[in-house]
Image (cartoon, rainbow, N blue to C red; front, top):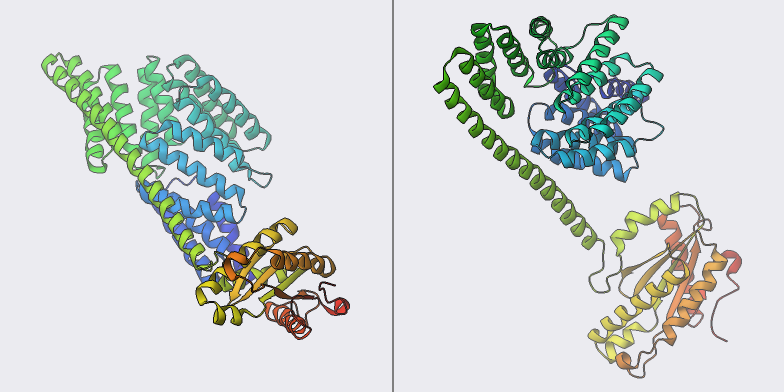
Length: 528
């Protein structure tokens, strides 16, 4: 891929494809996302880089690193919030929902699933519109709200048909059927599964292994063991052909096959399938599936008449179930800790950043803040007025009273300037430029109006009760005003230079006054 706009467009198109398709091979998907991330970094396009990074995180999450993914998703989400990218925020919440589902926190899963739908805007792709609503229905089902889940599934189904998304409709019907199954309504589960099969037949494509596994477990619950065995053979054949989504797929499929074979009375074949599932659970640390393997093993022992072994396996099942609950709680705690640590680190970084942009004496923003904020305000092209404020005869205060008194005057002056400007121009800000100089920035304020407001501020400084600080010495300020349009160029240096020029004009004219720009030069504000 070559540089420039065409390269960025190609990369954006490649990312859009990855963001809007079901990727079955997580390892291949991870490699592809990592390559797109590398290309985005080479181009130096921040938006593309964040999108590519998020695709890579999503693939990484499917390998089991939930805590690591949660930390990285926080960074992507923060970027999306800062840049107003609602759809990327929605995708972040959808993946948080999945993390909480896998860790056993179904309430949090639902909370993030709701946000993932609420944040969708008119630019959301058909894939997002359907997928996010389907996942919300899944989360509702996990939380026992099956009636609410059915409403969402129906809405997503109508949308999938309206937007002509047959593959997404397959995924939706599969999830719906499985949710009905886990809720205990096997009749409804079978009805949705039949619709799923009919939909696949109408569109001329084979069901993926996950859909076939759903059909298989429903057939088992309805006593259709021979049909379930046939379904699971097709499922395993599909898996061997390369259709794999998550690390627990094959273990799940072998377990379902074992249950179907047990229903037919094929005990030895069932045991072989169950052994294969158990080995995968141990190898890949699939604790939740392993609990159900123990339960199925107890059923096989009982079918053989091995009642002592069945009892022992039931004990193992309950012990494993307790361990699973402990592991889920630990995973949940780790995820929450990761969220807390990430948020804490962000808050600390922001606190240090804010400290670096504040004057330690007055608490006002400092020159660094000016250099960060003012160029953007000037470049925006809107009406903008700035003013440099300088304390009159400040050296006299330091020399005759003390530097400590001088510091108190600076702090009091900062407070008056900040209070008065907030009342006159709420969107403006005050900063200390250094020494006894301050900068006032007045957005969306013409020079004429700003000059009058600044003269009121000048009067407020002089009218302040300084007796407890300076005794009989007066405290006044001189102010030089400049409009962004008045400068030779719309740049920070040009605008500040003009304001500084007017400040010195105020000093030369006798101090304690405001001097504004070109057409207002004759109007040097002072008390008469």
